[in-house]
Image 1 (cartoon, rainbow, N blue to C red):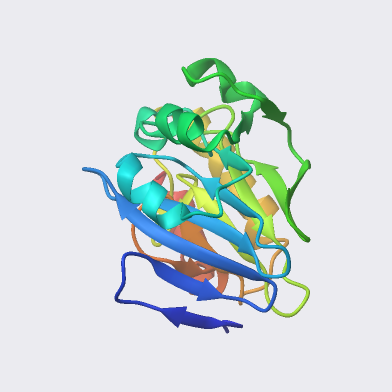
Image 2 (cartoon, rainbow, N blue to C red):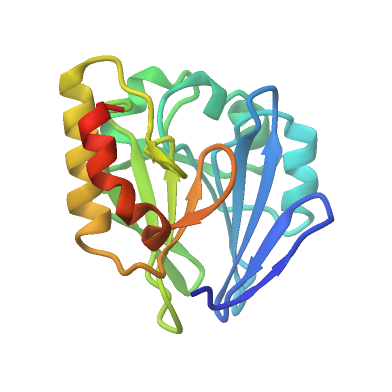
Length: 216
């Protein structure tokens, strides 16, 4: 199911893929997941969601620095450390066009659905999933050596889609998650959510109809 090695017990959980390393660190009062992506060939690094605890995030980044911080969506618990991390690293900031106005730190790279973001020799695909916020995104690493890996922000968790405020928002998010994740990606796809434990597409697929019926 998972093509790589997982190291647990230090300050971060590390998923070692053949070409990319994905380090996961939980920070702040809401246990937000921060992800550091490192290209194994070039050493280039990109951070996803500078949520909180800038000191711990900087320890995670290390002396190699980062080229970019991607914010998955505009909710404040996902960007509390963004300004400080940007100032300390000189990294570019990136977020989806439809959420830029809700992020108080200036956005250097405005993302849109289908864009590619480079992490050294590796590439992430931006997938917009409207509903949790207008500009919520997932980031897909389509591993050439194994199953895909998907960072989902607050759009998909073990047990359901992210929080929505209206039936219309739920319908939009649910349709996007089904059509753009479950109908496209194999069961072995590893899911990295914005909070909590990882999961896989296959582990969640049997519950899709239950999610639709309950409306959350």
